[in-house]
Length: 571
Image 1 (cartoon, rainbow, N blue to C red):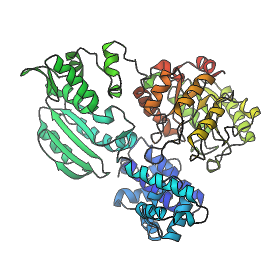
Image 2 (cartoon, rainbow, N blue to C red):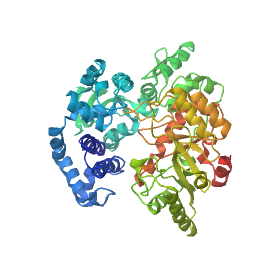
Image 3 (cartoon, rainbow, N blue to C red):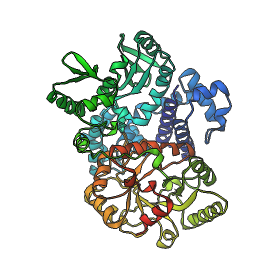
Image 4 (tube, one colour):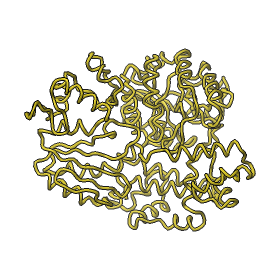
């Protein structure tokens, strides 16, 4: 089993336990285990092969959960999950994707109305039966119906990090083959889109039969859709479709370019080729029958008079015109990042201690970080009171006294309350170096109310960063209603940074909003929102997102040295 599959199973167990009203600490244990396994850099299967006890040493796992992981890896089944679904239908988990339907309401709808599926929920809501239940009403019923419609139209694409977890082991096996001369994953994956549909793998080889044979024999293949010497297509056990394209080295650049896309970008480039009496396809660049380019992507672009365009920009949003004018941005890179400005410790809902998070950031070579635990309004996270932040401040002072190149800034992720005020008094706020203001509740208010709420928070002199600005969770929760133009304007006027949250299920802001902010002159900050050491590695997904928004290093505040960063956030 892949790590991501184990994590999904544990998340499902947590959902079912929550619906059944189980002890919150037990639910949280499975949630934490899912996050630990899902962000683990090493395959669980390989850990078991080396040392069966190694799992117990992972944060939040222990002997009981380690035993369940072993069972999953060896049998593909988890007896506890089967036991839970005998009491509560597994299909109820889908109800939790709908705004307004939490675990308690899902159970109430099931026990009172016999609703087990989304289609049954829709039928009950349209008949007005949901609004008749205690604690519900017509407004919630309308919210549920809108949520079901959004869920129906939502694509079957998976988050980028999830697709990466599924495809990486297969790609590693192919790269080990001596017959593979070059290999890249193309498509929306290479463009670093926030979600991925089918995955295209492009290979250059003079022995395509050997490569195809190895690809088709991959143990995780569930179904073979097509097999041939130059093209194979399979569905993995996860449901992800992977298409393999094998070409000679002379065509590799053209094939990689063609299958990277996007479609609109490719059409525009081919039209430029037509004007030069050229034919451009996956096999090369041709003048008549003679191939004049295609060994590299640069040859394809050079044929139409353009410099190479980074894959993240190939969306037909002005990149061709910028390339022609010599105005392509020099995109931000992971090596430009000097600090991480949102992370949590075990003082609230993180899994690692303050000292462990600091040590992990030192190991990553950061110049500075901000510790930003939750405030008390986030009750499920065990948010800190004023006294709690004072205690943490003293612990950070102790860390600062020892010799270290890492500057540890005192911070907090402060809840933006319903009226736009902050969940921490001014005296406590002014003791902090970095304040991240975030919305964690009441997502279903009107667009005007939400915009007013956030803009008021940005006016506070101690709010430096707006965290995960639209509140979205990819595939699970739509962005809350928000006038982003007004928020960007307020961020510019009040000198607030907008966060690009690098958590793979958030990637919030979107690439379009990032570019909007850049064009308005608003600075951004890329943060991991890490709740454990392993999640610090998510920074690269935030950088990918910023690159898709045309960001250069100068657009991102945490590419600056610490003194320049602190000067930037002074209001």
